[in-house]
Length: 544
Image (cartoon, rainbow, N blue to C red; front, side, top):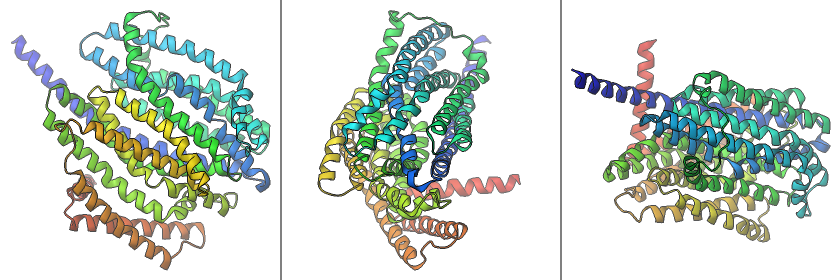
């Protein structure tokens, strides 16, 4: 009787786990969409609040954008993406094996040590912000006023990253306990508060710039306390325990090192690109940020959502030695990610200026020159949507099979190649396009390296990718051609509403053409997405 009860309990737990995972994947995806939308809205408000006087608009917008780079670099050098990728898997494993007390104790030490280190470096950054930002002055084209303003504004952002770190630690813990709703929508609360701070305090004086970053600091504090309060049942177990020589902590920290370095490399590359952006006209830093935000929307929403579902399942199959299932799952995930990424890249390449204007140009404060600057960067980034998708899928696959050093190797290669490509393309006279071309070229090299290294084990390698790519690019090429002709016949002029309607018509036409060609080419992914969408619509109709 007890054995049957025990078996039923296990089966019930498995069912709940599967249901919870499906629901959590949806919640994470929805959270990503809202977060990205609020990121776009943030840039629009920045353009409005710091663009009142056209004579100094670029200086203040660039200063605000630049003020985040060094604090973000500190954050990623010290903790970065290693927090979630270390805490959540470790604590989840301890909970699954009945070792909750050990897991709580070790994570408590991890949180304590990281917090002490962060307090020290945040204080260091706040006191010596001018010295850190003087590194940008090595580029002789840098505007000294912009640097001075950025250094002053960053004094509020260094302590901000401490509270962002605490919130991230809360997220890692709460996800281990499957509290996905809090961790997915907590960042939305933070973004709303940041938007409010920019809207209320933003302006073209040093005082208003400082008040804006001060408001962002307050937003981070509230964000942390919200995460802690809503997850209090789980978070109250953790106590301050500074014991850096503890053997369990050391083992956990060693797991974090490769992921930590990889996250740091990403942020270093951003600093490098902002350094080179100073070589061009005023407003280039802000335009670069606009373009970077746009291209990461399809990448984040489509690719990250897919790998969120793929990674734990791939890890389970690999641990069970189901290598055929691993290959099949990776193939399906890669194709689904690229099926949506390829047309996104083609549409952005053709409609780069229209995309920027549709998103950011809501008033005369965001000028045609601002839009053109961002569109130039965006054109170079279009191919990065595809290469970044492949890189992310392979990186998550490597993490799933326990080979964290290979993504680190690819990151180091990118760190070396990125400035080399920047210098090369700038010297070729390509202009601002040099930076996004350099980023895309670096991504291409990393993609090739990861693909070759992962596919050495043929039993794990994805299959059918070459044929899929030929069909996908063919469908995207037809879509791009139709979009280009449509754009020439009906340019997006007139009032904002008219512009958006025309832009929307072009987007809908592009989607229809792409899916029609994909169906004619018998791409399974097209039928998959059509059935999925139509199924949800039918269920929604029945409920209504």
